[in-house]
Image 1 (cartoon, helix red, strand yellow):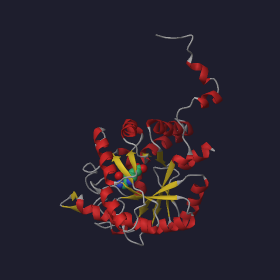
Image 2 (cartoon, helix red, strand yellow; image 1 turned 180 degrees about the vertical axis):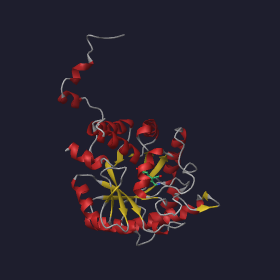
Image 3 (tube, protein in one colour; image 1 turned 90 degrees about the vertical axis):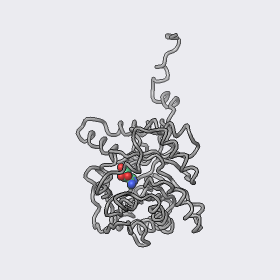
Image 4 (spheres, protein in one colour; image 1 turned 30 degrees about the horizontal axis):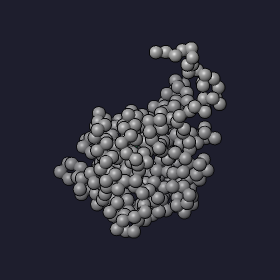
Length: 324
Ligand code: PBG
């Protein structure tokens, strides 16, 4: 069976030039999307405790940060808003002068070439912290669709380049597509969080975005971590409803899902390297237990190798610098 010593795998591993010739997967800055949190009522940037280096930005400081990102060659940001006021129906999510709408407008004026993707979900805006509206103690699917579509439309009217629904209500991609088309935005792409799992890895994000559910959890709308066939059904439905880019989230514990989706459809595929994945690497690195740069590059390369075309990651600015 073995052709040794004729075949020697080590021949092409002898130096970096050889290794780079035979390298199968490439990670580059054009594939990265950087999440940004914009908080109403802050005067100074506030660091998220569980996410070292990640800030909640006041609107007034956003321009400088956006310029830094654009300058690093990162093509896109993914925006999350943190409003001052929350209510049962998440009114600030679709208010024309809401924090996120003002942030979009500002970014598109000051750094027009930086793509602005917006997260479409009610959880940062509702007093109960769920991703849809509640009645009889349950998250209502159909009643939430109108609000989500309204939210997406308000983002697009403020200048967003791509909307990314992350709520996991059934039919939301279609509802958003219809509303955008009716208002003359038929060219506006939708990046669907198609296979979004009910994950413990979102913990630090909920601190960053102030969006932890006040009762229950998200298991009645986000996916069971045990399932992969179901992810393919979610992908198919979102494609049928008009998604332009599909997503798997989280990434590290779902590499097989990324691979299955990549082999299953021909849409561009995004993977979200989420807050808990970032926090784990940061914490271990701060303890001196792992080499942050090496492990980060290994994880992101792994996500690309699994089949993701683009990666949403809090490491984007670091990686951009390392790749230079
Ligand atoms: C909103 C949303 C969440 C994340 C992105 N959009 C949190 C959640 O669903 O609870 C998580 C991102 C991260 O952990 O980095 N629904």
